Length: 228
Image 1 (cartoon, rainbow, N blue to C red):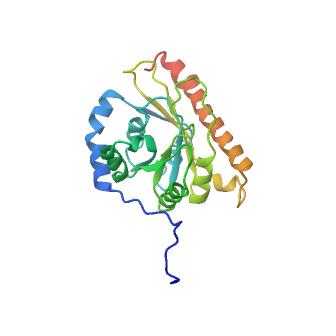
Image 2 (cartoon, helix red, strand yellow):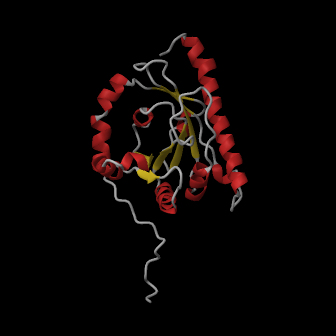
Image 3 (cartoon, rainbow, N blue to C red):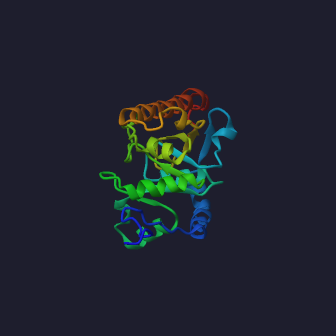
C-alpha cells in the first residue's frame, strides 16, 4: 500500500461559499435590523471584545432567532455556525447551511469530523459561534454548558468570547446583546487537559456569561426602566 494513501479517519473538507454567505448577510440585514433592532453592549475594552482574529463565540440560547441577532451583532465578520443535524433534514436548507459555512453537528454523538472541521477553521482565523447549552432555553437560569466548546478553543488556539443574549419579553421586542472580553483558554488549562479540567473551565465560561447578564440588569435595564 502506498505511503501516500489517505487515512480513512481524515475528515472530508467542507466547501463553503463566502459570496453566498455575504449575500445572505446583506439581503437579510435590513429586515433583521427593522425587526430585531439589535443593541450591542460591550463590557470591558471594546477593542478586545471586537475580536478580528480566530475566535470561538459562546452564547446562551434564548430563541430560535438568536443566530440572526448574532449576525447583526457581529456584522463586521463572517460568523460560521455549528448547526444541529436536524436542520439538515430538508435537502435544500441543508445544502444552503453547508454552502454558507455552517458545520453540521450531532448533539448526541459529536463526531471527530465536526471537531476537526471546527478546529481547522479556528486555526485559519475564522469566527465560529456555538451555543454551549446545546438547545434553546427560554428559562431564567442557563442549562449546564457543555465542555466541547472549551476543547475546540484549546485545540484551535483561540480565545472564547462570552456573549449574553437578553431574552426579549415579547415577540417584537428589541434584542439586547452583551459582549464581554475574551477568555484565554490556552493559559487556563494544561497541554493535555482532562475531562474534569475542561468542565471546570466550561463552568467558568458559564459564570462569565452570567456576569454579563447581571451587568445588563444592574447597569442598563434598571437605568432605562424598560429598554425593550
